[in-house]
Length: 68
Image (cartoon, rainbow, N blue to C red; front, side, top):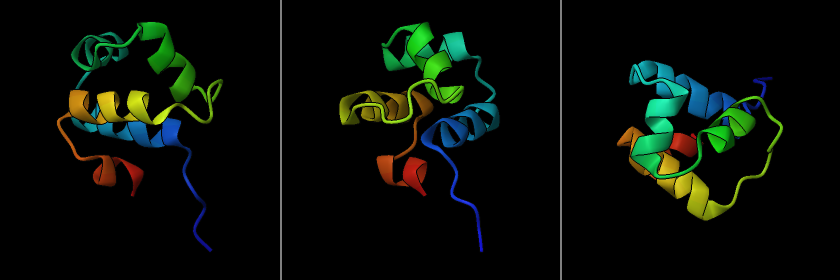
C-alpha cells in the first residue's frame, strides 16, 4: 500500500523540482517564509485553501497537480 504524502512533503518535492528556495517560493506566493517552513516541516499540517492556492501559483502549477 502506498504511503500518503503530507502537503508539506508535496510542496517540498515541487519546490525542489522547480529549483526554488523556501524564501524564493514565499516571495512568489506572497506568503511569509515561516509559513512555508512550517508547512514543509509538518508543524502546520492543514494549511488553509487560500495559502495552498498561493503556493501552487508560486510554483506555477495547478492546485490539482500539487494535491496529487
